[in-house]
Image (cartoon, rainbow, N blue to C red; front, side, top):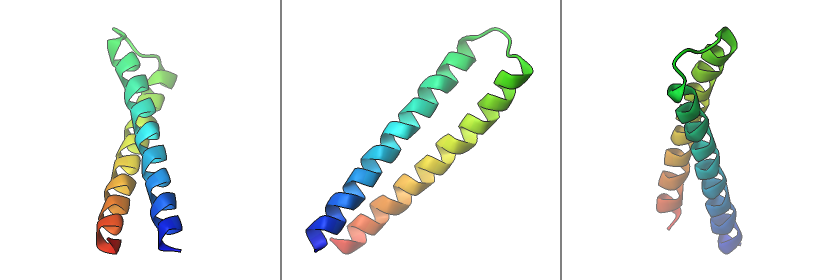
Length: 69
């Protein structure tokens, strides 16, 4: 039972890391542009929030996995 929890937790952490990387890549693309449209500016703000949220979730899940171990 604990192995399933550990595996699920690990999979979720990996999924969040991948999500965080996607957000970072898209932000890098936007940063390369000399000017951003209004939609791109909104996307940039949204991506920064999503990236931070993913990072917070990763941190919380990693702490939880250490507490379980």
